Length: 178
Image (cartoon, rainbow, N blue to C red; front, side, top):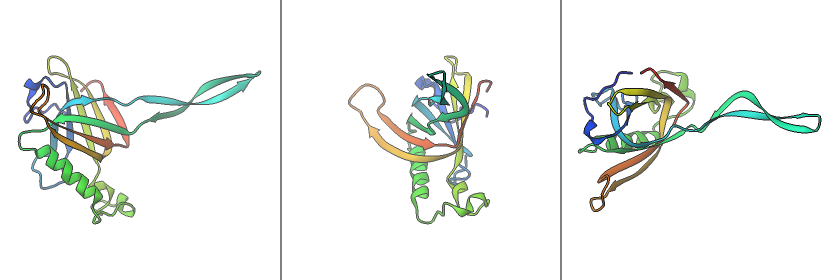
């Protein structure tokens, strides 16, 4: 994934940018991906499962070859001036929650109107202090789980407008050489 800064304001000091693919979710959008200036983002905790082993009266946890991770990520970002990112997310959530989307049998069928219409890959590029990509996290088959409140705060210092949302995903793949 190349680093595309055509629609970003890098003067904001942000160090993480999320790119969400649009072609499956809303084909009417001309851009193939939307960029989000992230203000908060965390990589989830990853763990290895274990089983208790008993030997000579002692119990000891032993690792098993299963990795467990929470498949949910929260993002906070600064919306653009015309709220196109929020509009995209709102339409995505509406599409997921609508009665017209059949989620089930058509999953394997391209264009069948099922899960493939609401899932996309999300790339999060973390930047160095010189605005160079350091790592690219790819969340495969992601879908929007929660649309947080859109906040307007013009009285305190900090971000005047911000929004948060939560995604669920199938797999997280880090690329340490973006």
